Image 1 (tube, rainbow, N blue to C red):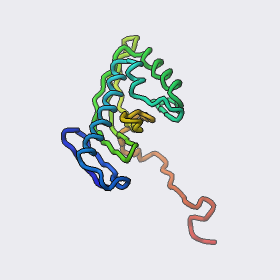
Image 2 (cartoon, rainbow, N blue to C red; image 1 turned 180 degrees about the vertical axis):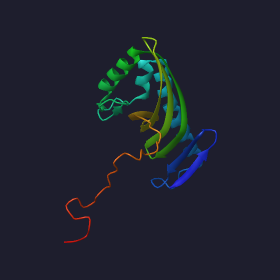
Image 3 (cartoon, one colour; image 1 turned 120 degrees about the vertical axis):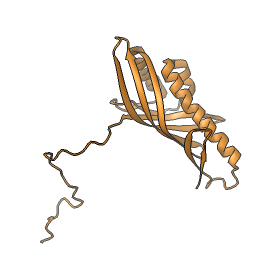
Length: 182
């Protein structure tokens, strides 16, 4: 696998050329830029709370999936669209700051990992911030990259362990004695 970092993309990127050893770096750079554009389109549609634009980003395949922070898995474009309509209906504004963006492309699949700092204003004028770690997976249909998975989870920074907490160790052989005696 050949890894490439294009400073113009602002993201670390790796592209597998195992499937096509004749792949040219220019086509690699073009595919990375197209995936970055699709990912940016997703966050623009989200920030604008625009279902039509969101529909242009997503695949309509029955196997597309979405996991919003704290939600159960949402399957299929129809249900995913409904989930976005519910979210968009409850917020007045949302802004994103994306960091640690990493894009990889392998054949007709691509994935983007990132951390998003989110500022949200609800319809009730409540403001809150969230930090989420996200994986977005795209599949290439014809000449367009479409999202087939958005998985976003609340990001929790490491906190020092409390000395009073009970720490359980993992036992790979739960039925055996830890002392080694038979």
